[in-house]
Length: 336
Image (cartoon, one colour):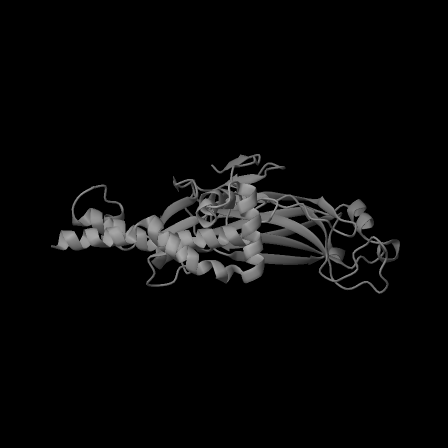
């Protein structure tokens, strides 16, 4: 049976920055529900109203169907539009599904005039191969054309988002182990998913609340090396070099992502980036004594030289951190 539960704040979730909107807007004016779901050709299963997390991680399936309902109160429409536009609202309802781990994003557009009794119903059809980790489903109300005459205090441009809903989380994979507090590591069959490039050993996804390192589970020889627990011998030395090779790219991307996502006030695009910056900045700016001053200097350097100005410094730093040269020499010693 699918597990449903109320959403709770989780450490490391994306920091959603408050943004000033210069027009009337209802951030949580729409109500969204998943009414029922179907797995493959199985029976339809009802979901309790108000469910914010649907956990399907214990189920095996190839296809998933979701019946979604969105309520658009007339009071919200009246609030976000000037009186001259209320009789024929220039709005469309967008039902948005996003899976950050696979970069899947789908939008269903529903003209407002087609709604029955303030309610829209839509069926979403998904393939399991398109999904990984967590999927978010939400609703947005947006303008479909520019206003003939702009009214003060109201959105006037096409595509302006004037109302939204809370999101519903769909979990399709169980929790995975975390390494070092910054990273989740997951073995995945690359040959069974079109989202992985053929012939690659790993892929890092940074655009998530916790970065995920996917390692190809199809190569038994490589996996045997990576999963080995010995501390001596050639296999142990080979494991260190393989992890070093992966680690160089992983740490470089984590560092670059954290640098790109930081603000001078300490706000980061993702919660994990703060921990990465606190690890990195003392090494970049050893002459500065506190995190705030280092962060200020980082933002100044980024403004002056752009992100590319950090690459050379970070490449050298990462090589020393992962101790690649030491481990290569250890392999050479084992080979005699």
